[in-house]
Every structure is written in structure tokens, then in C-alpha cells.
Image (cartoon, rainbow, N blue to C red):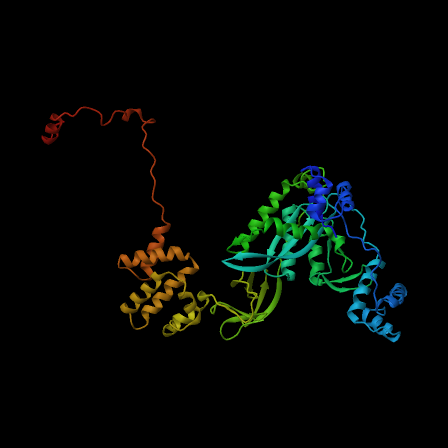
Amino acid sequence: MLTVKNWEQIRRAYYVEQKSIREIARETGHARRTINRMIDSEAPPTYRRGSPKQAQKLGPYKQQIQQLLAQNASLPRKQRWTAPMIYQEIQKAGFAGAESTVRHYVGQVRKLLKPPATYLPLEFDPGTDAQVDWGEGDVLMNGAQITVQLFFMKLSYSRRTFMMAFPSQRQEAFFMGHVHAFHFFEGVPQRISYDNLKTAVKEILEGRHRIEQEAFFHFRGTYLFDSHFCTPGAGNEKGQVEHSVGFGRRNFMVPLPQVRSYEELNAYLLHKCQEDDARIVSGQPATIGQMWQQEKSLLRPLPTHPYDCCRTVMVSLNRYSQVQVDTNRYSVPVDDAQPQLTAKLYPFTVEIYRSDRTEPIAIHSRCYDRQQELLDPLHYLPLIRQRPGAIDHAKPLRRWREQWPAIYDELLEHLRQKWPDGRGVREFVNILYLHREYSETAIATAVTAALSHRCAHLDGVRLWLTQQQRQEPTFSALTLAEKPQLQGVGEQPVRAEAYDVLWGGGK
């Protein structure tokens, strides 16, 4: 069989190199008739089977297989002919081949029987519709490659897209993605289309009917949009946002973003979404940003107070002044806790509340690992002040000492030598208490100054912290414009005899 390369060589030899057909036949070994056909052909040769390939074993049973598969159209969905059952059926008729041969042929027949997928082109009015979906992407966070969950919302008219990264796809992240998207769009679309997400749908009923999650009812009631859930497996019903998931990964996350936190990553993604406003989508009359300006006024207004995107759980305090959330334990101030507390679980933080307070008594970064302890050393300072001998073995301080400024160790050693009876440790703990009011940088600077000026104690550190905050006084320039009688004072020539008069008591 002649290849495309042979066809190209023959035509080049004849038309470009001006060789004769006899010469080409001698060089290539092909018949003159073949060479003439290649010269006259404007397309490379293709292989054509002269007769259908005979299936020696399966051939006599192909018609039976086709008939069985055709019956599936009228059979219940869960009681149709499958490849293994068809294999058993034709074995009864004498088939002696392999089951894999039957499976391969069944797959070919099913493709022929299945009609090609066709879709209606859709058009949306401004302000009416949006679509939501989740995706995944990899980033380099603090030098390690991790997989993040990407929330997408897309306005169907203007095609403006919002993208935000989370550690998980839990309900609180699902709600927070909506809230940030609504602020990005400066309004709320009238209807949002979803897959049948567990965070929104409790149970799928017949047809379009769904039992939605109670929290999702609450969220929808705050922003007053309608929800539309796609047919299971029919991603084409929200094809715009499905496309945006791949587009966002390819265009916003290649190469892998290098960030230090989710806050930095989401600021980067938000900037990319804003830059995307300058793009013109195929078939649209203007840029995404211009289309959004037309749509913005038709979106529903945002509520006065945004939805509190958290999951609230009741927690119990253990004897180590910790509460357990999922499988992780979070510390609580030992001098400000109650046996029963409330934890608000946000996508990135955990806030812990007393029943009689409106402000949290503890805030931690949320951990998605298992069996971890998240300890704030400031929560345990009252216990260490009571038991100064435990300072070297207290787990919260041991972890803190691994990263606190080296000047702290120098201060602790100085105070221990000055007051070896435990007072030095208590004085050091009192200085650590200052972290509730001042930053670590400010305290480290004050401690350094206190040690160098031989006043390394609580009052000395406080003094230097106050000095840092004190601003140098400034004085305005003196002007005599409003007092002309004083003009020229100090400019008269010196008269020595005036001193003689003063010395003699005269006038």
C-alpha cells in the first residue's frame, strides 16, 4: 500500500524535479500505472477494504445480537440486555468465541443505535440567570503543592465569572462563595442553576422536584433568588459554567500560582476575574465588562446585612481548656471559658463564643486534617503564671518557643538569674501577656531596648512600648507678621555703653 509519503515523493519527482515516469518507476520500483495515478491524484491515497472482514466465530450471531439490543428500547431501564447476558444467550446457540469479542461488538452496535446528542442554543435576558459549579486546581502554597476547591459563578447574559478557592466544598464554603460572588456582581440574579449538590439538595424526587436543605432555604430567603437543579448527569444544562471551570484553570492557574495563604490566592483570582472583563466572548456584541454594565442595574439589590456563612455547633470544654470540632481540638482561654460553648465554623476560621457574649473568646484558623491540636499559647498564660515550674514542659509554650524571637529566651534567662525563686518566670509571663495588646515585633523591640538599658522587667518593657507609640513634638515656625512692633528685634547694632548703664543702676 502506498503511503502519503510515497505520494508526495512521486509528485515532487515529477512536477518539481522534472523526472520522467520511466525514471521514477525505476527509482521507486512502482508500476507506471501506479505512478500515473499518484501524479493525477490531488489527494493522498487511502486504504479501502475490498470486502468486509469476515468474523469467523461471531459473524453468524451478529444479527441475533442486533435484535437483542434493539429490544432494549422497549424494556425497563434496569432489565435490559447487557453484554454478559447476550454472551450467555448466543452461547446457547453455539457461539464458541470469547466474551470480550461480544462486548466489543455490543459497544459498536450501541453507538450505531444511539442517536447523536443535539442541544438547543440558549439565550438569556440580562439579570435573570446565573450558573454555579465546583472544580479543582493545584497551587503552590508555602512551597508545597496542594489541591484547592474552586467555586465558580457565572452570569448567563454578560458571561461575567467569579472564581474563589476554598479548602473544601462544605456548605459554609458554598454559601461564602455565593456571598462574595454577589458582591463581585454588585447584585443577585433572579435564578441560579446547580447540579444536585448535597450542600443544597437533601433528596432528589421525580422530575424536577427536590427536597432542599434547611440551611439552603435560609440562605435563599436572605438573597431572594430562585434555584434550578439540573437533571442528574445532564451537565449541558449549565454548560456555560462547566466551560468556565476549565477556562479558569487553564488561563488563571498556569503556571501554578505561588502563594502564602488562601487570602493571597483569592486576591489573585479576583484580579484575574476583573481582567477577564476586557475579553469578548464569541458571539457577544461587546466585552464581558460592557455587557455586565448593561446587566448590573437589572440584578436584585444586595441585602443590608450579608448572610453569616458558617455552621454553628454546640461544643463542650475538656479539662485541657479545649473544644472538639470534627476530630480536631481548639484551645479556649482558661480564664474566660464555660463548660458549654458555641463554635461557628467558617471556611477559613473557627470562632468560639460564650452564651453571654456577642464577641468570640477565641478565633483559630480552621484545620481540615484529622486529630490535630490547635493551641494558642496566650490562652494558657494564667495557668503558667500559677505554676511557673511548668514553663519548660507546657505544650503551648514549647510550640511557641520554636518560633518566637530569640530575644525572648535571653529575657527569660535574665529574669531567672535575677529572681530564681519563680518570680522571674512570673514576670516573664506577665510580659508575654502584653501580646494581647501589642504586636510581637513591637514587644521584641521593647524587650531589646529594656535589656540594653538594664531595665528588663514588666515596667521597663511597658515604658519602651509607650516610647515607641509616642510621637516627636513638632513646632510651627515663628512669624511676626501680626506684631509689626517686634519687627527688627535683635537686628539693632550692639551698644556696649548700654551694659555700663545697666551695671551702674542708671536708666
